[in-house]
Image 1 (tube, rainbow, N blue to C red):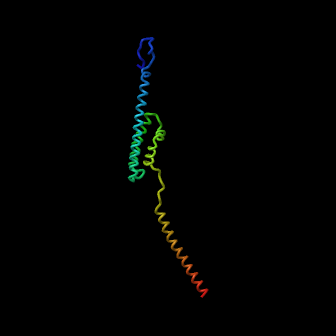
Image 2: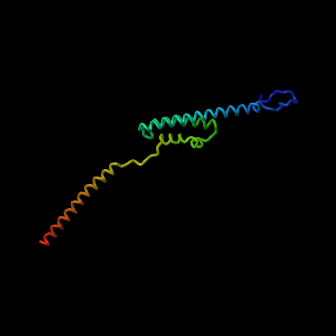
Length: 152
């Protein structure tokens, strides 16, 4: 029974209950979303602060600590996105600290450094360099010997 039961010809005839409650409902929803937004910003700021502390203590990107922080904040962002109807990409744009936590939790794969190849190259270069210097010294000594014999 959505409509008021009124006497015929009164002013409230045909007006639904939801029409009366609409301003109150939208005010309540906007206040609720405002508090949820503040709570979301505080949660992201707290997680960002915790992530900075972990990073300062030498925790490597991709560690479980960062993943746990990101998962907690991502759940809050999803809940707020569902409640407000704002897309998650828009929320990520409004919350830059969330992107920073995401980068720490899910770092891009980097090319592993090949230390063995570098070490092998240095060893080969030093051996060949020593042989080359020895050859040059030998050639120089041989030339000096021949020059000395020419003028003697």
